[in-house]
Length: 322
Image (tube, rainbow, N blue to C red; front, side, top):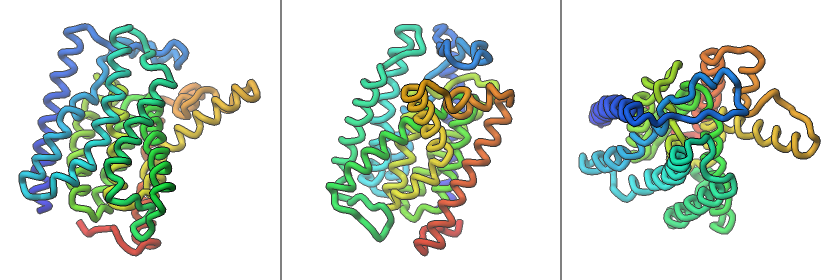
């Protein structure tokens, strides 16, 4: 079975790599490029006009990836539906935001409250859809639905925003997502999750081929929302919701530092960091973009390794020999 998964993953890597290149050429032909925030680092101004919405490729390929596995008798369609439905719904929220930005030729799409409401709505709908499977914090513990459902919605919304704020440097979010999916492929014990993590990894590596510094395409909100949703749904498929913490290690740090910065400015009129999210703080401190990406990816790797160690030593299972 492992060979079949690897062969299918390679096929989707090649397809995604090719389609991403076509998407870049189409966006350039239509002269549709990313608008850069005026209040961001000045160095980023030179990136203005780079094609965006690169995540649209995997967003469109995801159903094909999921159901090709089903038709190869590798997993059930229902389980695949549970895993891929949330990334697709979340991706729609991001796509809406991206389309508004393109239409306005601005870096501002949905208002913050509008985006939050839509994220909460799709998260709540997905939690309602999967409620019958149970919401497991760890494989041996499932809290009452009245506690588990709000907790899962909160984590879903947090993950979508965490990946979104991390997507600010060439290759940063994509590299961290690749580490997360690789770790999930190693420790997952749910067949559908193993296949989905393999397919997701092949797709994000294809995207990184074009997104590495200097980026030829940006992920866009459609991509960051899609990948954030997939990380949550894979943890849920393995009945190990707690491992969203180490699996999204660097994403969580980026989100928390952004929240701390906002709270400090609004509450005390002072900044804790030179700029948030945290990667911009290091940029303004003089660190080069590739250096930040490599060090943040290494830091994220520590979190992913911690997830594997926790599963094996604390829970006594979940790490497969591959």
